[in-house]
Length: 437
Image 1 (cartoon, rainbow, N blue to C red):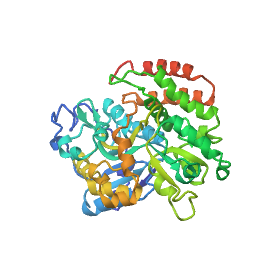
Image 2: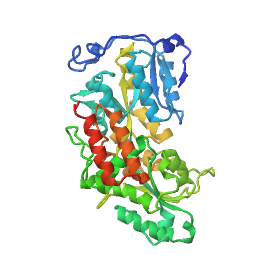
Image 3: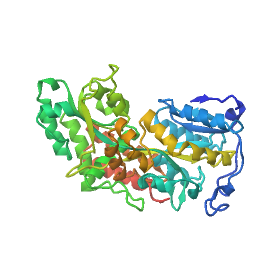
Image 4: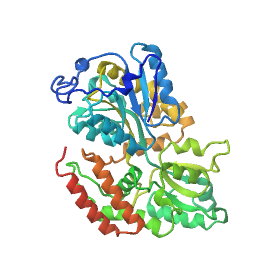
């Protein structure tokens, strides 16, 4: 774990793990502030901001602006590893020790319910944030039961990148909308001399959170669901089997690259940029990298994006993104609330898009001419987000996603049939969700 210290923040503030009281009854909880008003939040002074690796440098620039304007309330950047599973582990470890070392947490949207159910984060004053200006599905990821426990920072939706030059050479004028369309397009493209050595498709197939995303998308794109609104699993179904069979079939038929069972986002990005793939399911951050003209990409100007394909029609993305939450054990919570307002405002959202290609949570940013010119994929991305299906919204999310990864990966490896893997997964998920949060 890396830390970046401001000049006004002393080291003990980060290194001491002072114990706080339990979440129940703390300022900002329902008992003390029934309406979610910020009046119950106490304390001003130094705080920390905890998130994954700042690969674009945009986070530090935003913190520098805050620190210049708030010299008595500096924010120290605690930079966690890039791997999301490790970020979650460290945040939970901090919460279980009731340490005040972490103040504002950047949570993957699917962790919000888990952290709220365990009282590791505070309920926030919904009326003090411009939620009505944000995309509704994004705001819903920040709610738990009847309260707001996070403020959307960035969103994300899966999209399909495809080689326009190769589809055109194969006589295909439109991108695929169904899995069958995509397979047929691959048959035509891979028969071309210029496609020698290429593979059809890649996603995120290693045994990690990306696999849960890809599986959830496949199930939803076949008309199924992983969990219902009551938090009950529904994976031992014909629709879920159709979705898993699609993924298994890609491996069985040799349509994915050798070694794709260990693919993460970065592995797929590199393969697409090197011209080894016709299609890839990816997050929009790939767009800028694949269009680089510095020699790092062989496909610059030769690709486009569309929504994910499905069984019989356009498919569904899993909803990605980040919500900012307030640790229940943090000091200086009044400063933290003001900082969350600052870092999630529309101006910073615009900078996140311009510099980091991060999907904005504000509706208006998708219509700004300058944004569309520099990020022409925004209409596709907005559609992906609006119609996205959330990943399992359950308190025991860590156990749920681990079970999904274990059983789905076994099916992809050929160690289990889709039918057996889903039956085992249904049983495992039921054991983890007997008590709905």
